[in-house]
Length: 568
Image (cartoon, rainbow, N blue to C red; front, top):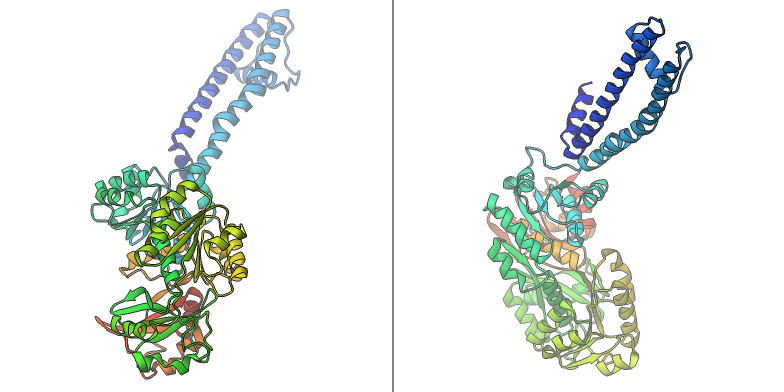
């Protein structure tokens, strides 16, 4: 009974349900009044005929006639009584058999279902909720971010102002709050003052309104906003956002960085303390055909090899891998060490031909600008004349037309290009072009963007050497900000982990731990208090109470937890 009462109170707090209930109640009162009037008239007419019945009998007769049951145990003898019976019968058919079911369904049952549907999505978080992340849209970045937050057991809530979308998100088992994004009450109920961070990821105009709303009630909460247009960055920053991320521009730059790796020089893709994480292509260098343990970069330059790209897949290092022309090493060292490597390989693998860029929208334009800034010649292919006009200042040549046209690609330089950058917004087209370009030029380095993570494998099978998605870059950027780390983008699924050293590893050397062989993770540093040790060897001891910094993917991290942390 207590549960029923609480549920009823819950539904009665819904304004629409309450209004409809009032209408139904008014009709029931009208129906009751009619029954009372008929019962009174029953007594008068029965008295006129010389019959005597109780008040209960009057109610009984009225209800049996109105409901068309008409048992016939009580009847009128006069014409007046029979006419009255007809009136009661017809009004009963109308009021009980037709109007009442309709009124019940229209003003109680349907509103009840709507209320249940509407109110199954919560409006507020639990009172003790804190250090959670609030996300203002369940977009492609949010979906990727949610997976990573769940892997790290970080609490989060989606805020949705569209009820149908909120219900769908709720049905997908994603924590969601229903509320208007420009209403301060929504964020108060989300306990924003105790939140760790707010991700504002609507369109640029709506983002500005949301940021201003949040700043009124939470002046110090960190706000991360996603900007579709570079022109919106300043506006959102002035509105109060701590970090504004132009992800599409960054995506273009990240893809351009991977194009640059076709040249025999290291290229930094991330940083941890004083360590730079860089990629080093070895195409046409003396390292080709050698095994990893034979090249001995640590002894010569002090850098460590922590991974190797082979045709789009980042592989852990075991030491016996044979390097090919397609290999790209992931190395770690300081700025001076990387510079020394670049000096050694500077004269190798110089291809003066322009890079081929297919698709010059926002991402492609950013890539073209980045390549132009770094002194790399670019030829562009696009079938939109306006896009071609915008990208022209940053290109060597622009070719208008369909990239599937062999003659057009040949003119654009596909047969001689050192690299092809695919940046159309259609995954299917990028997959097709990756396969096509690989058939036309077996040695070309293919770098591509994608939208859906499920297309990574097929893109790599099609021939892409490096693949990066908008969602991965966005989620990695938000996570890096939430942890206070530098953004490091190794590729799809690979990231940097900082984990307390498990008790099972304390006091052991790196060689004894066998972390790399058992999990595939690459140990790049050990952090003890404020001291970070980056020059590691097989004899480096894993101390008590310190943290270990590793590179790898989530599957590798799960293996690490299973082997070293979750020990029965």
